[in-house]
Structure formats: C-alpha cells, structure tokens
Length: 123
Image 1: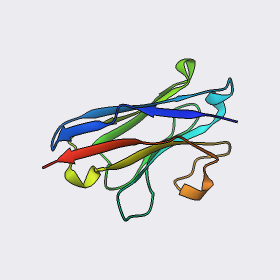
Image 2 (image 1 turned 60 degrees about the horizontal axis):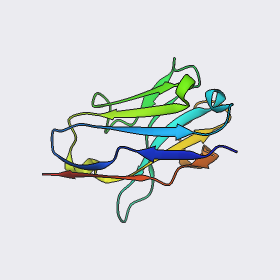
Image 3 (image 1 turned 45 degrees about the horizontal axis):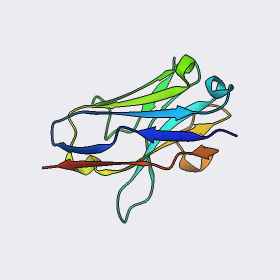
C-alpha cells in the first residue's frame, strides 16, 4: 500500500506560479511511477504529467507542456509539480497517483491516489 498526500494548492492570478508536492508513505516509493492528474468541475479526470522511478523519463499533456515541470526526490518520498504561467483553464483539483508498473498517462492505470488539492487561477 502507498498513501499519498498532496499540498501546495491555492488561489493565484493568471500568469502566476504554484508548486504542488505529494508525499508518499512506504519504503518502496522510489520504485513507483508517479503521476499528476486534474479534474475540473463537470469534467473527467485528465492526465497532466508523469515521471518514472528514476526520474529519467517524464511526460506531459499538450496543454501544460512548456509550463509545468514534474520532478521527484526519492530520498524524501516526494514528487513535485512546478506550475508556471498558470491560466484560468488550469483551475481544477489536482491529484497525485502512483503506479507499480511502467510509465503510463492513462487514469485507469494508476493504483494509488491522493485526496487532491485545489488550484484556482483567476483571470
């Protein structure tokens, strides 16, 4: 089992930045692929970014490419999502997720989820 706790959400103006953090429990955190997803009101949960256990491979949704950066610190059991040049359409609840197997950007492929953190971007 892996328990995940997100933090760092909040209210920011368009063009601003936020950094989300996700702390995982368990000594095998470093072996998991980690992903960030988001869900806006009335919409389905969607992929934002993911990173392999080593950090060598990352992937992003087209809508955030060039603005968001995912990273991880396995010594701290933490994965980050740096979000720059935020837009009102980035407003959503952001979820951290963990996956035992290889890299994936599919929501249904992830085994463990955090409770989410709200990000609101005002225009």
